Length: 257
Image (cartoon, rainbow, N blue to C red):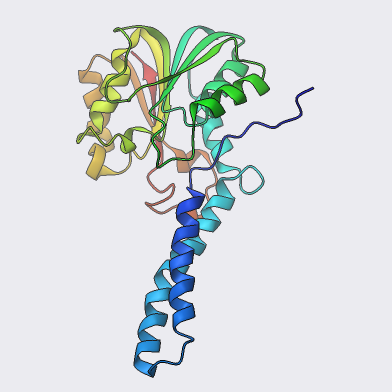
């Protein structure tokens, strides 16, 4: 019997955290060498930033992990709680990572077929093989399929899905200068009357504009129902996570096309 556990990873890239801490420790170590007092002060000052940043990122890593604050699980659950579905038809998960949202959706809705896509770029600690392993361990491998694709240009026909979800992906689509275009592409493959739930940094007006304007933009694209929900109003997010580099801009767009 397979006793392995699924691996859904962590949004904080541990390799990057280790690299940042290594730079800080190297600078701090150099400050202990027999050097001039002025150079020692300079090295200590230079070491403070990567050490501080690395320690903060370790805190965020712990808060996101299931053995810590569990905020990845809470945010995945928050998104699915706001997706209106009768549990049938076809659903698309855009930017699946290690498959967490797709697998959770399939487990919630035993009659639903789920398609999940991701680009699985080398800078992320995610992989298609891990997705497939997770689906197998969770017993939904026959209802979830994984494909490599970019959120900028989905390889599906218009109105191909009954439901579309995406979680903290649109702002990462590097080949779309206007991140709203990623939302539009996601809505393209949703059928009329189908439902959607997107969670991203929608409060970041430099990317998405004012929330009210964003909602009106979706309506102009033909969305019949749409609500803007601040994630921090739904979850008790610790103050140290409520900054723009963590969950300070987290919010939901949910509705029906």
